[in-house]
Amino acid sequence: MDDTDPLIEELRQLTPAAPSAVLTRRLAAELARPARRTGLRWWLLGLGLPAAAAIAMLCAVWSNHRATVGPRTAATPAPPASPATDVFTPVTAENVLYAATDDGLATLPDGRAVRRERLQYIDTITWVNPRTHASLTWSIPREEVRVVPVRYE
Amino acid sequence: MEASEHDSWTIWFQHYGPKLLLCARQWTDSAADAEDLVQEAFVRFWRRQRHLGGDPLPLLVTSIRRAALDVNRRDTRRERRELAAESPGEAVWFEPVLENDERRQAIEAALRRLPEEQRSVLVLKIWGELTFQQIAAALDTSPNTAASRYRYGLAALRQELTAVDRHG
Image (cartoon, rainbow over all chains, first blue to last red; front, side, top):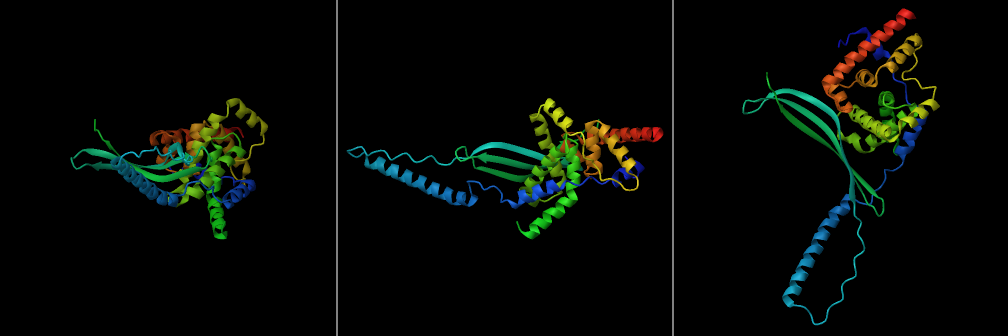
């Protein structure tokens, strides 16, 4: 593949057609809208988890205390059932490989020859609350380095 | 949206939008479908992925390719044929050239006649400016296969254009 090939040069001179004005307007409208809010906030998780832990500890201490004291004479009425809490269920998990580079040959400390490949992914996980239909999407970049043994045969 | 925010995405989209649209056209039956895919991928990128760093084009192309596969799986072949039949006046893939637009038309027509797998690699390599590694990742194939398809595609395109030149 010769980059000085006149045909390649000629092809490069062609300019891809611009998107329609309608698409640009649609993008402007879409991006002007605030991103969809989700029912879950990370700062709430930060507050909620310690609070849940504190409640769990209190329950444990209370049940221990009751066990040592023994049952009272009259049965205490059961506490009312707590309202169903919002539960987010993971619905999709995908990873998109968007770049792969070959770092070339390398030698491991034990002397084995290997080829090192670097793969870049975007992992995206989506949770949905079936009750409110609120959704939470989490995307994070991930880099994976693969070491493939090289054989000279 | 802040004015600077608006300016930055429009500048970005003016640069990358045509390339993304041309890539999307390789995997869709109509310009409208291609624009839908570009919109979906671009909005997702701009909102959630632009701060991730690295070259954004391979990520966007991969995103568009995945979405196109989903759309193609969802729509039946019959529906797609009907849609294609509804839009006979297909929009051009390249900007018209003032001096010699016939040549542009010939190249575009020859490109459209290539098998999809060769055409995609040519488009991603020449106009998307992706490496064979990046093309392989976007198309779920190996870099060697991508390079072979590029060579075959280029040879087929050359042959087509030579035939056009010969016969006028």
